[in-house]
Image 1: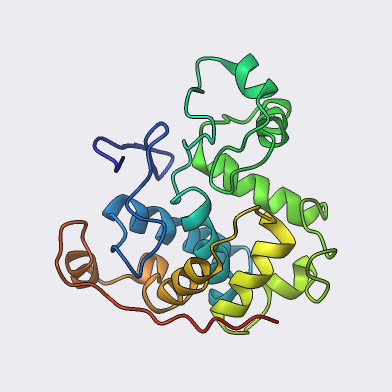
Image 2 (image 1 turned 30 degrees about the horizontal axis):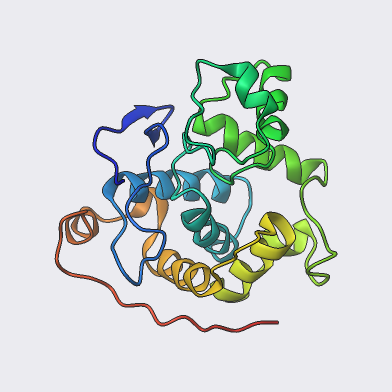
Length: 218
């Protein structure tokens, strides 16, 4: 189900348990709310010292994980009105689909931060980097957190790194992650995004950008 009535909270478009457009930009262009969220994330992480390449690699994954909707629960019966259910659910939640939910949710409560805020989720990623959390070299022993954040390697390679060092999904859909990352590298520019681009890549536009993934495994 595509978004129908997203709300803006802390500079993020959110809609409870709804997928923003497609997870694969080779099939459908992102919705405007998805583009806006990714541009906001680009500005934030550039301010944290990340490269455009590493941000693109991460965003390519998050488009698959959550369609960049902060209010997406893997268990679609969950909502923000039932904290106890969120804390005991073993599924994922949020931008990166933190699994189980309490990994993110309890941390936000402990930090007195609003769990439903997309900004809190960005703060969580920074916290994970600063405390060397979530990242694992067992499946991908080449890049540390620092290596990834400061890398200028191609976005498909960095999508691969984020997938295996951070997400470690059961069904990776790697072709989508590679293509998404390259699309983000070409088109997501943060606050510098030109208005004409927003017109061309709106939800209902028939013009579709075809991205050929590098499909380069390391």
